[in-house]
Length: 278
Image (cartoon, rainbow, N blue to C red; front, side, top):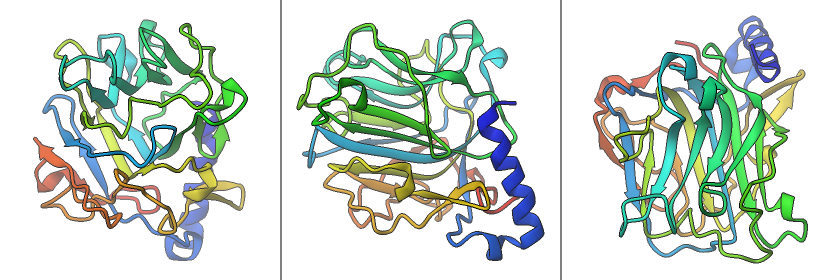
């Protein structure tokens, strides 16, 4: 079990003893189940971005299949494909678990171009606990290594130096929030693997680079969800709560940036979340 998961398991025990209503100030009542075998996925093509220099991706995840359960080099659960070429070049990218030799490292594929990947040093193999991930970008930062940061349960992850180098200062990060097809849960490349597990409170902010404390907080030594309603979403931002079983792609940010649903029936909404056990 990874060190990052221990605090969440301890938190689950604390919440059970205190009562979920008393322990959590912000409730997440459900999640969406993604099955790799069924190729469960959500898709949307965005419009004009508020900014290509700043964005934040925040989500809670409980994994299903791991690297030693499946074959393949990468396990993608959010991907953006170039609509002209149908590949990861140009505006393509993906958030992945890098499974080369079954290592299961969290990362950002195609960073910033070519085959370069920004990946964490730590492993992530726990299928029994909910964990909070944040990827934030801000290319206006003067320090190159601060232009894209990744966090797990409020802790900044140590990452490698991308082989293709970091983005230049003030460069457009032309992989997210562009007018290309975005996938959550899968990707169109038949040789690559989609996500298997659960996702809750999936948030994208266009034009804002938020710290994890925008979406979570520490209580009694445990990282727990925080009400994100004060977030600024920008043109292409969205907030997927998965609260409507008949419309799992509904956007609750106020932008109406809804996702289309494929191979996800009403049974893919589950009463299992970071604050509510099934």
